[in-house]
Length: 295
Length: 277
Image 1 (cartoon, each protein chain N blue to C red):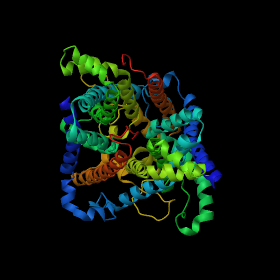
Image 2 (cartoon, rainbow over the protein chains, first blue to last red):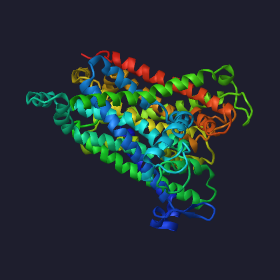
Image 3 (cartoon, rainbow over the protein chains, first blue to last red):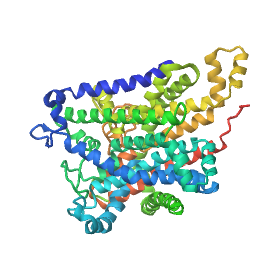
Image 4 (tube, rainbow over the protein chains, first blue to last red):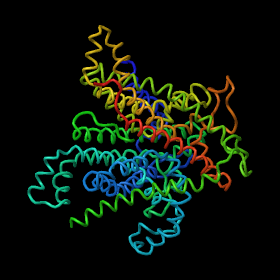
């Protein structure tokens, strides 16, 4: 048994060690410039990862902006507002969203979401909000906006289930005390429940962010795979996970492979930090070891 | 204000459930028409030709998942037993923390790490490396659920077992573990359902295959087809027939996963551990 538990630690250490060793070539060649360069040119051997970092950050941020209000809204609805009979059904269906494999999300996004965006949503956005510069350019359907939307759908169950757990953990006495002061239902939710559960909800959001940063398949299928930084959300982009998925099996020389592994190492370290932060926040609120979350 | 916020929360729930129903309905609509005996028993045809199926992908997935369970379940349950029964203090906290963090590693990173560790050393893609990658992804989930389920076994059971005079490890395995068995099986099925749909780790470990791979000497040493991989390849291709087959494959995959998740819900709903006081 002890060996099994040691194996958990060993696996993490082994991953970090192996990825560091394989990316040494690229680390020596480019140094820090790797993360600030914008050209990704496998032919001439010039690799710069900034477009991918930008793509990962923007798609994840967009996903968070869309997902957090919805997820927290669902959690509040299920724990505080909806009748007891509906509670189980709604929470089960939201968890079912988490069970759908990401390749099926991608499949649905290519054939349903993107045509919808191309025909209706993007022209409307360009007409009403095009002056901001975020919604300009030809409406391809695929691109950063599609990636953000599908990521949002994928991280809603995670944020929602953790938020639900921390909301339930707020003691009933807090709610009753606020009601005794004469608060309405919303005021009670805001003052007693949300205020107490703030740290846990933040932890859930950060966990969702961690999932969004590392999501590969659905994003690869809709983001357009163009390694360029563009202001408009209609433009195709490229994320760190997508470039690994697309180009790993075609990497012809050692430097190319090493550059891709270095991107993988960067992704590993970033998600490690994000997940560690999230766990610390959630543990603090739910008293001791956290319940297993759908990741 | 009160009414506005409450109705926004209700609206949020409706909005969240729309994509779920949209995906399921569209999947059924597109997939049901495409599943037939051919799909389930034939091999893929060359690109551009119509017909053929995904039989090797379905069987390949089964092989890889079986390997993954063989690796992930014992390690996961072992780690869970250790954390719940024997470990304490900083070390156990560290293991729990690492397991949670391991859970959050992107699946593509697991894929390239296993590529580096196993595929490059073996010299070829294989179902074995795919199984190892998926097995590693199962361990944290199984370990944490096992630990929680064991923690729910009342101490009276443990004390009664020790009162019989059997060693601690024996009482853990025969009595405490058996009491928590249904909950542990729940955790295993959840982990299984999660890795069943994973594509990214298999991209560079199992790699995919157009043909059967079931001979004794090739089953673990040659690239293997897998259902999620095949769906991905077909979905991004330009051929309509391949798109149709991708939907059929997606329907088969989602049926497998939903069956596992619903079975878990039913078992966990009955949830009472046999033998607990």
